[in-house]
Amino acid sequence: MTIEAHLSTIESDAASAIRAYVATPRGSQANPSPAIWRFLAWQASRTPGWMEVVQRAVDDWRPDEVADICEPPPKGFDQMKDRPRSHWIEHPESHERRQVKGLEELAGLRKLGWRWVFSQDDQLELMHLQAWYFQVRHFPRLSWIRLDAPDDGCFITSDRAVSWLADGFVDAPPSSLKHPSAQLVAPLNSRTTLVGRNDTKALQVTPREVNRFIACTASRWVVGSTRSVVEDAIKDRAAAQRH
Image (cartoon, rainbow, N blue to C red; front, side):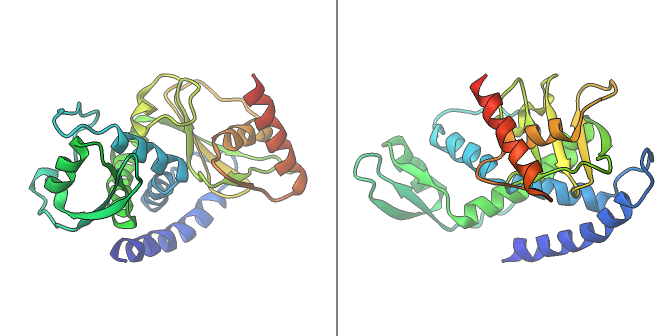
C-alpha cells in the first residue's frame, strides 16, 4: 500500500510534466523532466514481461551459489534492515503450496526442490528496486531522441508501456540494455515517444515501424487511437514472428 501511494504521486507529477513536454515544438531540444524519467522507470518495472523474467530468475536461484552482480546496488543497500515476512513456496511434483517465514527457511526448502512463488509483496519490493536501477543506472547510459508522429500517424502502446529489445530478444533482462544493439521505446502519448539507444546516429523510422516494435514486445494486448493502426501493428507482429 505504501508503494502504491508513492506511485500515485509519481503518476500525478508525471501527468503535468508530460503535457508540458509534448507541448514543446517538434524538433525541440528540451529534455524530459526528472518527473517523467521517474514515471518511465516505474512503467518499465511493472510490466508482465519483466515480472516473468524475475520469476524465471528466482526459479533458477541456487542458495549455495554466489551470483555475479551486473550492477552495483544502491548506496546503503547492504545496511537495510531485514523485515521478516512469510513467503509462498510450491512443491515441484505435488504442487502443494505452503508459507514459510524468512529467507533462511525458504533457502533450505529451495535446496530440496521447492519453488519460490512470488507474492504481491515480493513483486512490489522488487519493482521498487528495479525502478531505481532504470532511473539511476540504465536510462542515463542511453542516447535518447524524441519522435513525433506526422499528422496522419500515431503511436500505439501496450501492456509493456516501456519496452526494449536486445540482440533481437524481447524477453531480455534490463541488464542487457548495455548491449550495443539494445533499443528502448517509451511512448508518452499517441503523438510523441522517446527512444533510447546505445547508438548516437540519427534514427529515421516511421510510426508504423515503432508500432511494430511495441507490438512485438507486448505480452497480452496493444491499444491505439484507431482500429487501423492497431490492426497494422498486429499484422506486422505476426509477420515478424514468422521470420
